[in-house]
Image (cartoon, rainbow, N blue to C red; front, side, top):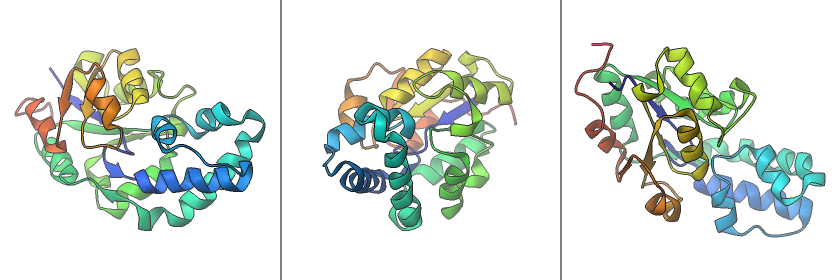
Length: 215
């Protein structure tokens, strides 16, 4: 029986696509004097910044991360918004008595900030961020940490996400992966092997029982 829903943050709960793309562009132009392909940048969703930047320039990775964060933090509050239907989804999952965690490669404080901006933090019981585990997506450690905090088994959770890193994390942890078709990685989610694919955040309610363990 499902007892908890694990959610990715960027591209699943919050629409941060333009902010992330602009942050990559700023960092690449400033440090590498180069442009980054948009499809390549989108493919990095779900990965840690360290892993992503090391793919491009190991010797400049730290500087790239600093510049990325410089732009990202400065423009964060004005450039993000929740996806349509996400508040209804989170509120109704909570109303049915299920626990919810955000499982992200983003830092915990910035994740919390993004949720608070739109009054979504009250629906989330745990934030599993960059600081929470030694290994990150696509390894299963972040999802495993969420389950540990909820004291549940892999078959008692589902993981809703939009990237290959989310899929890898879910499958490595033994959790059913639910592909979010409203996110920016439409080519990935349409072709990935998921337990379920949903077109609207509220469709998650069709995947869980009417009553959770809290009721």
